[in-house]
Image (cartoon, rainbow, N blue to C red):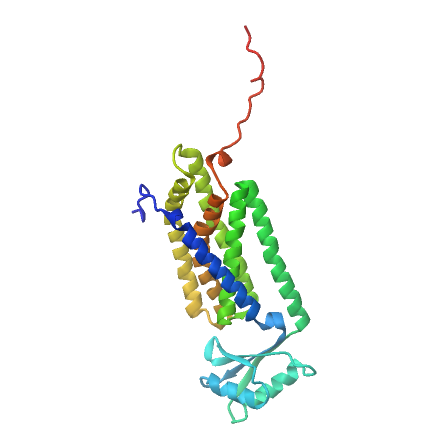
Length: 313
């Protein structure tokens, strides 16, 4: 059973200008938020101490925060880790205080009311490592975008290459903007999710562009906008099935995966929606606005050897 009747063309490109205006506003808003609020960097980037403790009974996070605030750790990030009995505490680095000393102070504060609290683990990340991760993470995204631009430009056409990079930059900026506006913690797992969003969005864009190129060569009549609409309609069924099955897995990770990968699942869930949208209204629309035509995608004619010689009498 078909999800769509491919004989009918969905006029995606008729909405390209409202979609471009909407995307521009989202990108500008994301950039403003990143400049003003910045990202809520996790300890992977800022450095600091991570302490995991275990209770015999379900822990009240508000009470844990109050106990830590009394001993000078008012900025501690406290959350459940896997179960209601396990608590993860994140502390910013403090000059002159090592991780073991901070761990002892935290444990003493939590045991002040004779509660049975066990230290599960304690980890320290230096600020120098955090700076290196920030630099290398940004460089990884930049190199990925440049490589994608070169690949798509050679594989398809330079207009498609610019459209692809515009779509990927759109996806990355808006995803980062979401984390900046909501002040969600941005750690290494979220960075991995952003890179995965680039790969997912590129895959969707490549499928759409391949069908557009095929239809430009196959369909003899029709304006470029009409051919792009036909191509997008034909790939819509595949897009829905792929996105739907991926969403099922990510929803399971989001609700059942625990705090450790919550940011990862959030970034990918949002990135799938944005990536699917950008494949239609950014990558394809940019290529159309740059003047993509049938002649640009037709294979070059190869002259046969000896074709320029005079025929024998």
